[in-house]
Length: 455
Image 1 (cartoon, rainbow, N blue to C red):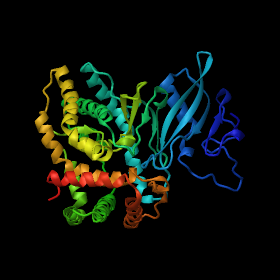
Image 2: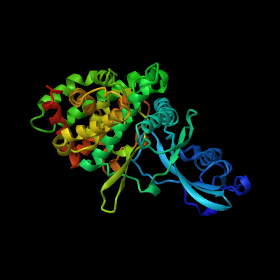
Image 3: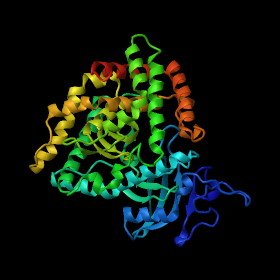
Image 4: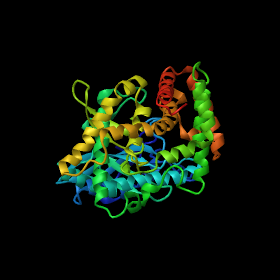
């Protein structure tokens, strides 16, 4: 494709005989830039030709020769938060003929909020090292158990320089994988596939841990980094954020009769919301397992058969992986991605499906299962506060409609209190006019009262 014909926002690079096209500077969008202008730093401009070459070599082999590449966006506002996801369409020569391949690329979002830059670097480090360091070891344990590889996208390249972070992954779309509509609660078929794969991930990590002389988060230090400890300032920033989410939820609950106890609890515990979160993610044997950390609709892809039934799954976006209780992953999924009725009516079946997948790995290797199904059920309810906290954070965002969809770029300044006030105004507007939000929140409030979290 000639550079002048490429739509604005799409990079195009022809590389005949290994030379860059002189008409399109590397990493700069193809629309014209005057001599006086400084090209604006965008997520897409972070992608460089040498990185594309490196990914191609890992994927296709050293003999693969890059011919041309272009950046093609395929996501929209509200699809991603900690990064920008785009794609690189590649033409390469191998075996005497030209072929094509596409890579999905996660990029630093290049936002103006300076206080989030360190956080972005942390989550890119966590995801890249999960793929590079943990996945090979996890897959070795699964292979030993007679199982297939972990269902994640292969990672071909990562660049972690601060402010320039990118990760290049296999594009799963040609295989038929796609995202489930985040505004719809998952049904039993979708949720069960996810739970079974979480069981395999968790079990493999226990077997991997058994072969290490130190805990996983001591061996892989990136696992220790989390919301509240990635910088000296992050503790205060995220304390304001967690407290702000409790305050917003209290205002929402106040709109409905019969939820006075919820309003009272949220307001009383708002100052301690961060402490509750940190207590919930502490690891305690036997529930100290490698967790996905961010397992909700947006971070899962499904493949369907000709009848539209989900038959396969891929876990993506491992940016908040941590060592914690497996029940944190289960609660996160249940309270961010399922409607109240599906969650409550099928909870026993869901936990059984997860536990069967988890325990089968141990039985295949002759290892002892570290806890019983009954102990898992009790642990699940001990971690309900975690699901509640994450549900309060995620649900109002994922159910946002149209122009009200949460866009981090619209948040102004670096003052977390100001940002939370802007966010509160948006969410209260959503609560008044979004028919999807009320039942999801009220079902969650009802669960927390019934399970004794709120009393």
